[in-house]
Length: 566
Image (cartoon, rainbow, N blue to C red; front, side):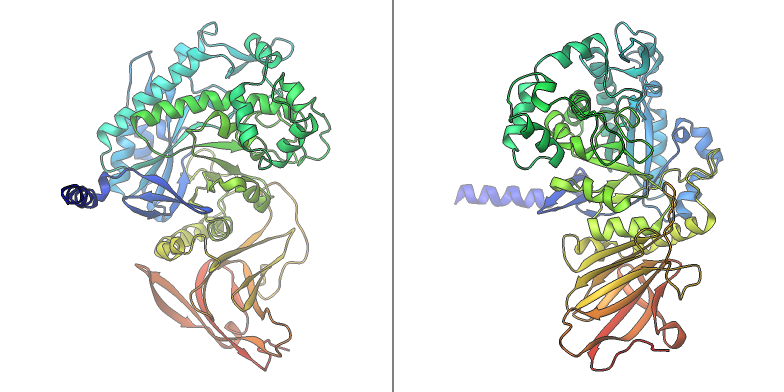
């Protein structure tokens, strides 16, 4: 009885620990991962600053960035801390910029995802402090096959750089722990878009020695433990070489092919595996050291391969891409997940690749496209979305063409998502929430929900007509999407942008049709639906979304066809 009473007392005390004392963490249930902040699920409606924005307090004060964030209905900012400013002299730290970010975020009721620009940013080492850059003997660089040195710290055998980076990161985490008691900073991105540019792998002396040596037992053990569940291409090359458990990289994984015609194939794959192992070990060490101080969620982001960057070296070789995700899991277990920076048209393909083997979806960089945000959240249970360059008054105002209409719809859509975030989060992992995404290459998409088939068609600028011709261009296709939540057998809430929605019955032999009983515009206020216009007549015959909005739709089954026949 005494033991039981003590347990009850401990449970009582734990229950009443203030929610703000709980660290943010990732909660995994089945195939779904949620960000938990202050004890409850949190949907990150975010945006990322330009690279240099958070380097200057004066700049942030004078450019109106905080009013832009408020106007954009963001609840999360993705900002950076750079090694060169945090530790300008070895062992001497400056956290003034971090203190400012935390204070301003708190004043504006925002959370922060903080990027650590350190050993690498976009493949190069420009954010390393001068005392690191100048001492290339102590901190060796990546070399090309002809011996040319790149402005890229080598991840191979470079313990001096790895430990120096980790020490600075740990100091940063210690400072955050000391001053950010309300957990304004909820997650860390460790480095940025890492990998070797201009070569499939590093040819420095340490890298050459490692390349000729055996594949580490630690990696082999992981492969054995996950045999049959590895990324398909990794499983293929390992099996083609007889599932060897000892040997050099080319003996275990084979001699890479160099055919680069199809960008969705895997040329120089063994070289990419080799680099992924060394980057994951290096960054995994940094993340683990930081977590010893403050155990926040940590992730790495990826520069994607594409039709214009077909092989490793054109995109950063060894970066945290799906094809080498298993290597990253083996080498960097302290890294919680891998995240895509999406600027290519193949949006759905990227999301499906990154969601393999339970990797949660978070998009820290993307274009200003509310349709992409809606789809990632509704179909892939994304933890958050962050278009790059939310401070659009910078010199890069036209980066990825954030036109005024796109911004207005993103801002409005952010507000809608925030107003119904708990309804959305409550339906993660459920078939009651689905997403549809269309663009100029795939103008229609459908999904089954309950007794109904729901179809989305991409709209032209003339709302009543769907688009019928594909477009081209990297990240330039017109897009549309619908976030659909079924709250009753015949009741749906849909947030849509640039789509026409139609309904049919799954049972084609019933003699019945799906007919709309009512269509209401409206808004959510504190999670409660507030109806606006009842759409009928010309505005209700077809369910359509031009600018982003939310509608409540009630259907019924009838012997008559509710579609307009004229």
